[in-house]
Image (cartoon, protein in one colour):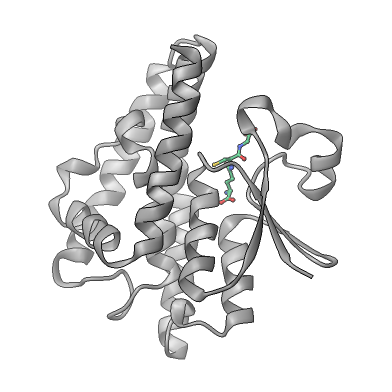
Amino acid sequence: MSIKIYGDPGSGSLRRVIAAAAIMGVDVERMNVDLFKGESHTPEFLKLNPHGLTPVLQDGDTVIWEASAINLYLAEKANANLLGRTPSEKLEVLQWMFWSGEQWRIFSTLLFNEWAGATFMGKPKTEAIVQLAMSNIRNAAHVLESHLATRKFIVGDALTLADIDIAAPFSQYKRTGAPFEEFPNLVAWQQRLLETVPAWATTRDEVEKRMVGALSAVS
Ligand SMILES: N[C@@H](CCC(=O)N[C@@H](CS)C(=O)NCC(=O)O)C(=O)O
């Protein structure tokens, strides 16, 4: 039975899973959920994830939501180095993944939601939210900038799930205005991932194509 992954190709969260699965050589069956049509809030989808969010993995009776948890599941299954190579690397990978969820991606998500509300629903941006997100992104990016001054990857000397989780907000930053370009090491690291991890570049293109299509429908 195939592993099903539900999500919309315009989603940076789905991108994390599709890229990781491709890097690990895990075959997945894509199940399209059109977020622009609200398909993650149908009664049927809410049985998979009551939060109405994607991506979701379904592997037989196993259902998992949260992209990081899905990636940990896939990496355990594939026994992949993306989890880190040693016990201490594995803990470091988890540390950065938890940090990414709580202190990093959330602020780019706030910016994305403000942008999407304004772009697709004509809802004015709330300046206080934009400012809160920008200052928190800058604070966190300063730490990443020094961390990456002497490293090619977030943990150890190879790609791990930590890189994928932290790189995800780059999927939408040109639209949301997240100030990543103020941080040259961060930009260089992101560029390196795009150049050396084919699945990271392919999924970037997929997000772009989907977003361009969605934007053309409202312009
Ligand atoms: N923390 C979650 C975030 C999931 C999330 O925000 N998904 C968005 C797409 S990137 C979504 O499905 N949004 C649908 C909605 O809000 O209706 C994860 O990492 O999986």
